[in-house]
Length: 166
Image 1 (cartoon, one colour):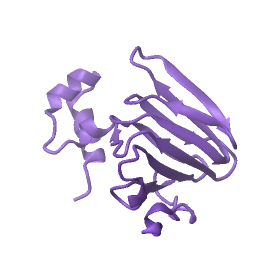
Image 2 (cartoon, helix red, strand yellow; image 1 turned 90 degrees about the vertical axis):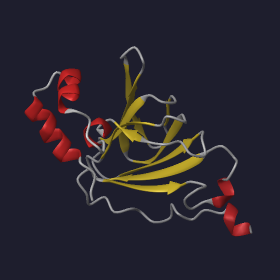
Image 3 (cartoon, helix red, strand yellow; image 1 turned 180 degrees about the vertical axis):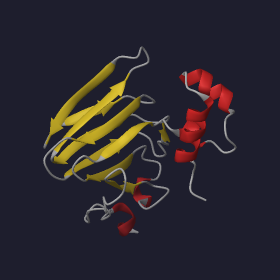
Image 4 (cartoon, one colour; image 1 turned 120 degrees about the vertical axis):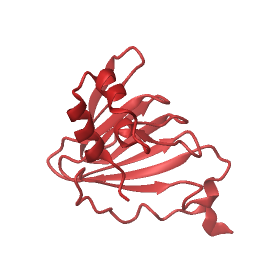
């Protein structure tokens, strides 16, 4: 069917009225774009309110190329040696996030921003850095306290904050 190969999911801007100030519109074979099936990539559009943040996260099965359509976005990733690679991008600029590395995006412009990402995996996966505090069942408080050099009470506060919605 011809419509399987056309995608119109990026036409509308998403609602950025949320704590992170972002809206994601995915273009994934398994979700809403069957024409991508077996082609080995996925798409994503982000709308950012002023100050909107895509928090640190990884894609365990894909690298990502991000393109700035509108605005100014500060992007970066941390390599396996702990080195930060970061820069600010404006309309027309690209940046690459290597596969599996922690990365982020922050709208640093004076207004809204829009980016389009292409990921080189049909099912790239995503894991946010806060996942260790949101695990169900919870990771033992003493493990997280020691790993992050925090007090048990601070770990419990983070576990409460990042607990998945029921």
